[in-house]
Image (cartoon, rainbow, N blue to C red; front, side):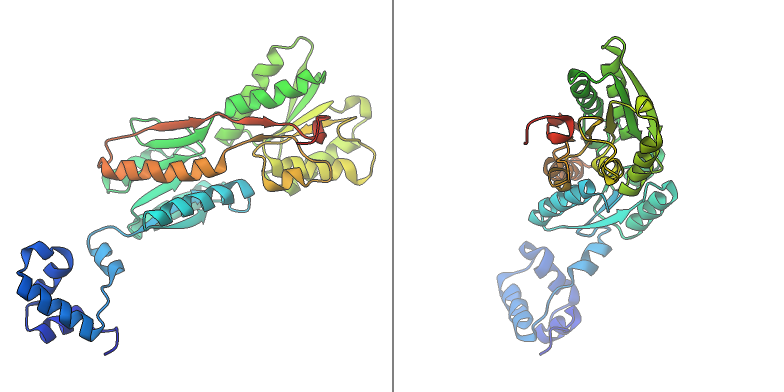
Length: 338
């Protein structure tokens, strides 16, 4: 018989109540061995396949985990998502990804959508302040873990990287090379970027006669980086910074494209350049890019582990895991190949 057989078909075939079939599937200890054998025989003969999706929805939970990221086109977030998916698969779950595009309204839409789908939990790299919405999700039984941002552990768990330390490492490296006129490129309205800027400013404050201008980019993309790079090329050489710290690698690669396109600015001789994230493209750039490495695999894997802890504790156990970033030196800052 076709695998479209229903639980009612099994009950009729085994001459038992539908509730008895349900007990055999979910609470076998409640059924006598003789009845259990009869039901299992009917299941085998009819080719019945239980509908786990429907069962889980009735129970108010699915095997789906929602993940909302700032930019799915950024290799950093795609790497985190891949690691989270690998870890979730081991637990028998799947990860669905939503791209907020750094837009708070899109982020809210995905949070509502995942809640309607009754996901078992939500992983979120937030655009702005989402504390109130996280509280609402918790009240409705949807645990949330912040990814790439530190959380208030009274509210939920989080896994992140110390972005202030990462910003400090980047700027300190440029300063140690003897560069004194620095520029920071990024979108400070994003909390992670703001933290990287604060760390860089702390490093500059330690070195007399050093300065750092902030160039607010129109986003965190290659195109936004090219726009900043074009503006730098148009400056008088004496007005250009000696080193540029970009808040992610995509921006840095865009800046690099503009600076090298007309061959009027040399990297690193005229301008040293460093990015953040250490995506795969960094090492294969026309000038291999120095960067601040984030442990993307550990971020994704740990996010799933923290979500499992949240579920097991009924939302009463929260942890904040913070990883330390790593400076990776390549030719774009006059370092040795890495």
